[in-house]
Image 1 (tube, rainbow, N blue to C red):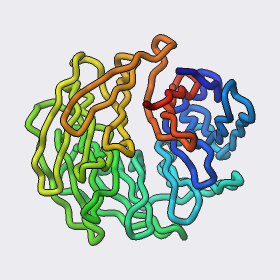
Image 2: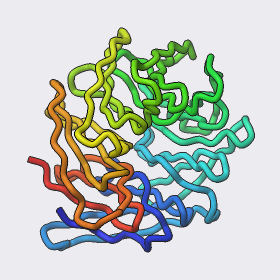
Image 3: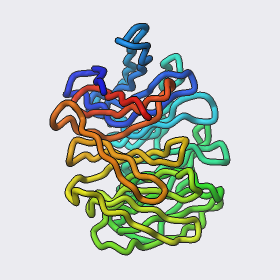
Length: 297
């Protein structure tokens, strides 16, 4: 495992994704910037790094995802906007109708739009590539909707951190809430698994959860209940990778619930988002200023 510096510790790499241009794109949450990283070959040959200012250091770029329009889309938690950056670094942003809504998670939907969560407003939002925003109120209050992903059933699935539940919203805005068996589970990350289910992290309970499209939930306790699992992504073989923010590790869970864990080389590196890279390796955003690269077996 190696660590690739992308910023100082004060910039805060938070989320990372693979863009349509074959580069890695990373949010620098404390600097108000988006970084573009070409990992390069062994030893960093051909590696390059560009940082794109968003013109507002406190805008808080948080989660980032590729859009159907060939650009990268991200949430701006600090100034309550949705951002867009082209692969050449041209950035724009769109205000949201609800003040102080706190957009956080974002994903491309099956309808060509981007869908996002609003932590402070108990809403799910939808934005088209030309910036038209629609908001859907949730039937719960104080739920803290967090991460969101596109499901195998054509709906969007999201975590409700403070409601200890998983939500589902159709493209028409119909919402279903599935309570979790464990109290204070506090789910955060969620991803579409290779087995046709949704997989999510329980940062409060130290577990990885699985929910089928009909709402059946299974939970897999991690060896360290205090490891605070945060983000999660699915691999091509059906395995899911996740970060353990509280234990400075990354882990894997197979469809049958078998868990393996890997320590990060730098202590207290604050791992958050992660993605499968263009070279087949796993990349993890470390808030202390780097992106870790882990060769997958």
